[in-house]
Length: 136
Image (cartoon, rainbow, N blue to C red):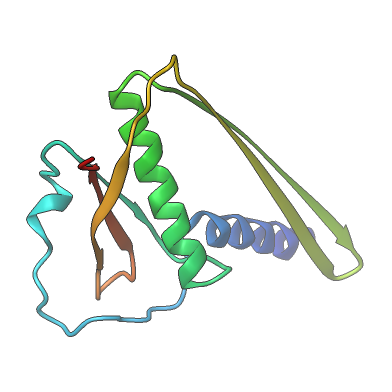
């Protein structure tokens, strides 16, 4: 396998893992209007995730994690994350492994939020999550 093809495969693998490339799988009928809360989430936050190599459940978990991170930032919670990706090429086979650690630090503050709505864009298969303050 040429170096050019190998580099191209590595780029595709990274884009797929990040949600940049994937099959089109419409989940809703065409003509479904984009919800207002995506651009105007009010007191909540909206976040999205594109195609995920591990399926719809992993895509939803990623969108919720992104929304939680953004929500936490609004309330002074410190969120840090580290991610490491390693790739190995043996002959004509490539494999990659990814790991992510997320650390949240709250100064004696309890921040509660709940998912109010979900919407899947039928044109791009991007899943949107609307996270709002939880009512106690």
